[in-house]
Length: 147
Ligand code: FES
Image (cartoon, rainbow, N blue to C red; front, side, top):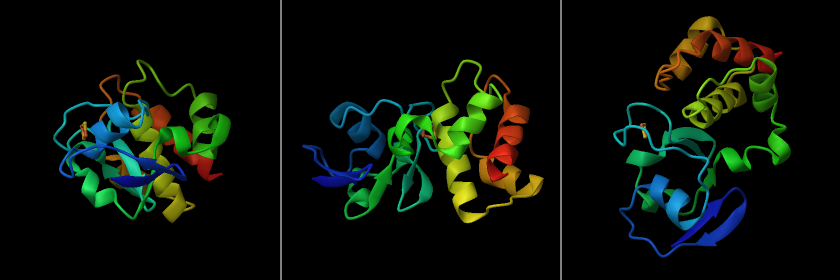
């Protein structure tokens, strides 16, 4: 199966119903996308599919064919995306496990809404769970990235 991941074509020997998460991690070697719940409930596995945030644990790899997949590794070279810079400035991560998913959801939000309200942020980020409770710093970082 051929997939466009981070702007590069990858030929992966995978079953069409394999979750995209495992195709990315185990076959494309992109381990920045994390496994949390495996049920579409925590957001740790969030990637972009044609610019939209999706849960790669509950999306079959076949659904990504012919579309653009972007993972945390492809968001920007040298982690220079405004959201990534804001994450660093605000020291958002604690344990860090959920943060690639958080960043991917935040980047998708800002791509579609350059000046999100608190309500917009809460709505867009509500599916991304952080056990360390970094939510206040996440909101601050999104506001900084929005400028
Ligand atoms: Fe996909 Fe939790 S691992 S939503």
